Image 1: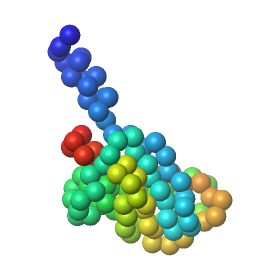
Image 2: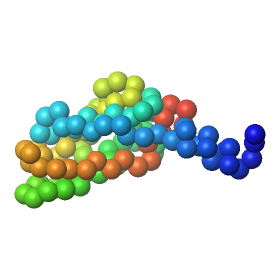
Image 3: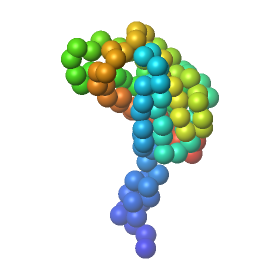
Image 4: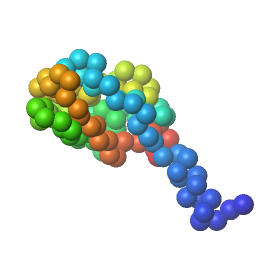
Length: 106
C-alpha cells in the first residue's frame, strides 16, 4: 500500500518523542528521547545540544522561573539541561522540546 496515508504513517512512526524528563540535581534536568538524537553542534538549528530547543514552564507555586543555559550529552538518546538557577525543590515543571532532530534528520 502506498500514497499520502502511508507517507503520513511513516512520518508519525519516525517522529522523535520525549520519553522522560527528570531533575538529576536542582540545576540539571535529564531529557530522554525514543531515538538517537543529533548531538554535534550547540549552535545547530535542530541539534539536541542547542539550548534554544528547550523551555521550562512552572506548573506549581512557589517555583522559580528558570531558563536552559547549556545542554550536555549523556547518551546517544539523552541529554542534560543545565539551568541558569536551581529549580525549586518539590515544585512541578514541564519541559518543552521543539525542533530537535534524530540522527536521520527527522
